[in-house]
Image 1: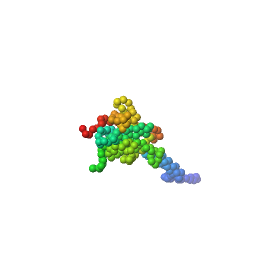
Image 2 (image 1 turned 180 degrees about the vertical axis):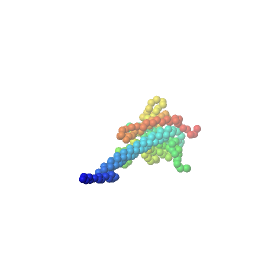
Image 3 (image 1 turned 90 degrees about the horizontal axis):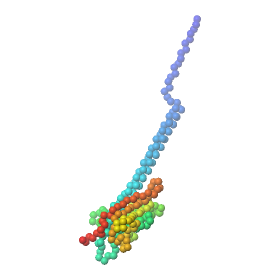
Image 4 (image 1 turned 135 degrees about the horizontal axis):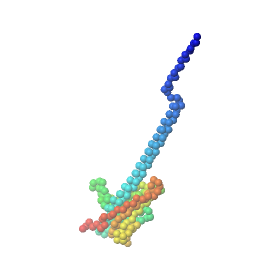
Length: 237
């Protein structure tokens, strides 16, 4: 008699979880992805901040150039001054000092911000490059403006008008003046000197502002402005 035995095979239950090694590998992959995303995001933020800083810098320089061009275009000379007065109340003095020129001129650009203030729409404006009082390695473009015509020479304007920074960290300021009678550019224009241009303004003025860019290279903004009031004004006529 043959006895047959049947062996029952057990079915293995499927595994629904992750082993410790698989969990560690997944965690490592997620960590690398997060680091990569964060590095990319950080670089983007730094690039955006750097670009915004450069744009702000260039906007400041353009605004300074635009303001100088607008105010220079409003220059004028006048015959009128008190009887017996030897001082000149209106003048246009562009003095050449290498790459640190200065320009002082009478103009119609003064804005009175308060009603009945003891000011005039005529003033003296001066542009000059000077060192930072706290850091001599830095140079700024300064602007001075009087409240009225004072009758004083350019080197005396500082007594009547405090200077404020029009543009920080500039390297040079240069002006050139177009002489229509000689058909050439001049580096100086002085209406207070009898042997220069005592009774006339330049037809055009070239403004050249130098500064170091983000790559530490010296670059320039250059602009020209026309002076429409060429004849001396006589208010008594």
